[in-house]
Length: 440
Image 1 (cartoon, one colour):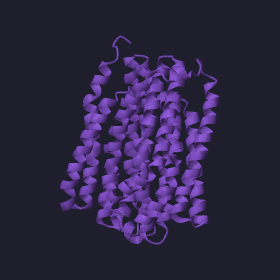
Image 2: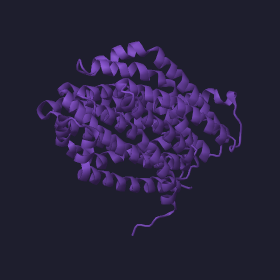
Image 3: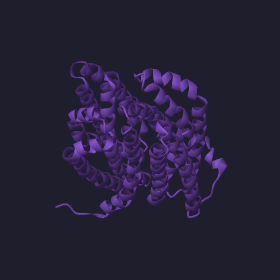
């Protein structure tokens, strides 16, 4: 019989606020989709889809700033090294600022290169470009928010993480509705709402860090922060996660691009279904984030027993919630589609491909969960290699399956991609356990 043990309680103490934090992110994407989905014509929805996809590739490729900071901070917390807990934060902030400023300086060549690969129609392209040139200015604050969130999660300070993300994404949603629905600013309003909300979020997050740091032992030390060995370790960890995240986003890019090349109706319908898939992924990521913090702390403390307990508790709850989302999409999927768009052709097309969304959570949950475990243990080389293999399989399958099967072939290849991520990570998992001393 299933018993709710101490590790289940530890998992849920982290998961509840993390899930609330995480689902505000795709909820924002759903609101973006809904406000432009009710504008006349699918090209508005396509413009935001392509523009958002560009930033999803750019910013999600930089998610190493969140993941690396979480894993390294959690391990230092487990080792009771408060000086290093502080130093990982500053190292992450410095890297985020450098990259964010570079992205602003390189916005013209980025736009010229990336938009040629989207396959966007003549109606969609100008709207997507308008969105891009506004939102690019939030690059430094977006990356700083990644570091802040990662540090709070590594510290297991989920209350601060919750407050920061709810403020950021809540304000984004409010401004979204005001600018697009109230002021009729269209696609530009969506981008401006994001820019303002990111600035507010990072300001509030830095204030919370100031309050949290007063409860730590140790001290801030620029000399310690700039130690070559530690900086190189963070760069190596972040470099592996960057390659992993870039491969993931390139796979999402290929998925959207092949939808766009079919026609605007399929692009819009795939965008809607993808919003629900992303929503479930962010919710399930709450359990992966709990695994990052709990398994990372156990790994830093060199405790195999605690590591195993953290993995098992977070994983069984992740599976149960994946089943919940599968049943939810099966039961009310058509209703959810109708909420997001009033364009009848898009509604009908999305219903055709809804069965793929229904099974997606049960397939993808294992890749999410194993990602969290690997991040906590900072076994980033294996993460990188697993993603490269999975992406290669996905690219081959897209070119094999889409010509005869159309969009069904695209969705089949996409789900096989997630299955490959879980399989490849699972093969290397025993090596992580063996690297922890069996005596603890």
